[in-house]
Amino acid sequence: MKILSVNAGSSSLKFTLIELPEEKVVISGTFEKIGIDGSFYTIKYKGEKDKKEAKLETHTDAVKILLDELINYKVIKSYDEIDGVGHRLVHGGDKYTESVLINDDVLETVEKLVPLAPLHNPANLVGVRSFMEVLPKTPMVAVFDTAFHQSMSEEEFLYAIPREWYERYGVRRYGFHGTSHRYIATKMKEILGEDKKIISCHIGNGASLCAIKDGKSIATSMGFTPIAGVIMGTRCGDIDVGLLPYVMSQTKKSFDDVMTDLNKKSGMIGLTGVSSDMRDVEEGYNNKDSKCITAMNMYANKIVDYISMYDAKLEGADYIVFTAGVGENSDVMRDMVISRLAYRGIKLDSEKNSTRGITGVISADDSTVKVCVLPTDEELMIAKDTYDLINK
Ligand code: ADP
Image (cartoon, rainbow, N blue to C red; front, side):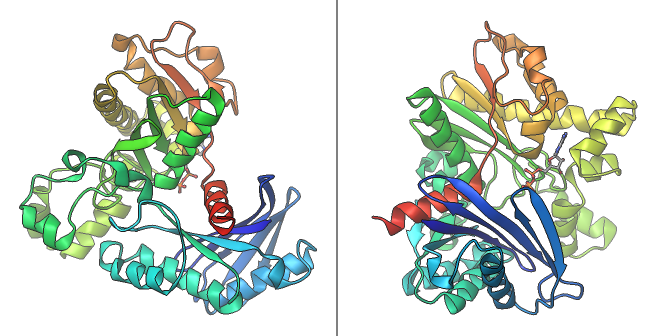
């Protein structure tokens, strides 16, 4: 079966066409600057990348070009060869605990959840509707970023705020990156043959940790929104909300502007003033730039805080798994994190850790907790859910 895995943003649309059950990635691409001047798209096929300019006024324009390019590249002969489309949807609230086939009810519910994810859900919905317009008969599936964390207990997802805020307005921890953490849980079970107690560290530009027990999320570091938890490329992570009115009064900035600063100008870019990209911060660290050294140490410390917390919740983790851009590629950051856990008998095999592109176990043989690198694959997870639901 040919399944399209889709991630639509406000001005972008990413796709991967995957054949299932073979799990073979056939072709992928990104449409950018949709509705903005200078729109273009890139397509990756058989190791070659092709970039083209195109007038993309709407997402529907992008979808039509996408499908025509699939014909052009001889991946399909006609549109109806696409067996299903899986869509990444950011927020499923407490309504969705797993992926679902999209129908009018689902669209309506996701629409109702827009206040919880005002930037993401509308863009995701535009993506869904564009595909429905061009492929009206093809089954569509919604895969929610929040769904995996719906297994958290009330004690874990409630905030200590007036209960009414939760009961009336749904203010609670939801958690994100669920598709990635679920991929880690599923893949680890596939490799090990059984469920182990895992701390999944998805550390990319956005970052979150998740404690996984019996294949389920029992705790995660992002909260009501993705701003919470560990330090990220441009997001602050956990902070004291009491600083908000003070910053607003001192800077004379509006609430929205301060929130933009916390989401886009904080984290590594805020601390270093150099870059949000870990490669640049690492370079500064190696060149003994004091701000980069502080930022790297704070970044590692915060991850260690969460690992220690989750280790306790799991009553002793079996595995710590690093994934996403930083987790998969930065041996320096992995080393900074794990060396802070020496008190717990956790240690790396430094040779394995520094091997470029390594996946698998990187801890020393006598480490009390095994440490792994496992590249995440959210696109595959979305495609698999779509395949499973279509064949149900
Ligand atoms: P996103 O959260 O946007 O999906 P990714 O998971 O792709 O991001 O992670 C992107 C980030 O990974 C980059 O911003 C960069 O900080 C980091 N990264 C990628 N390659 C390396 C590397 N070789 N060394 C250190 N950090 C890296």
